[in-house]
Length: 90
Image (cartoon, rainbow, N blue to C red; front, side, top):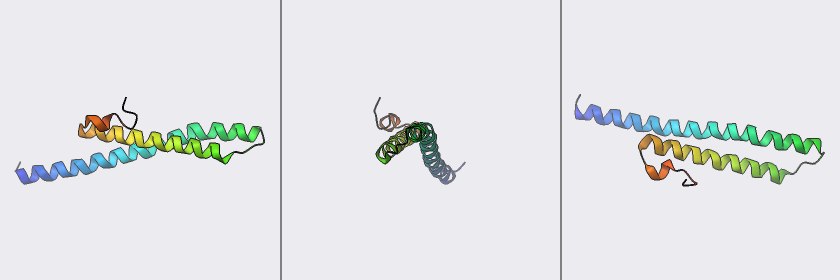
């Protein structure tokens, strides 16, 4: 394998790693969104009240969790210990 071929393979792998991290983050957003938002909406509908602030807060939490998961996966794939800890750093 020539050095040029190896460098091309490394670049392709980096692009794939970034894509995988983005997909994991999006999937985490939908997982948390469904698992967290639906119970909140169901309880609000049972009580005949609907507070959009609570729905948006749940949405924001799901988004932050997705960003955290994406950063963690990207850090894991690239070996970056700082990113591997995500947003929360634990």
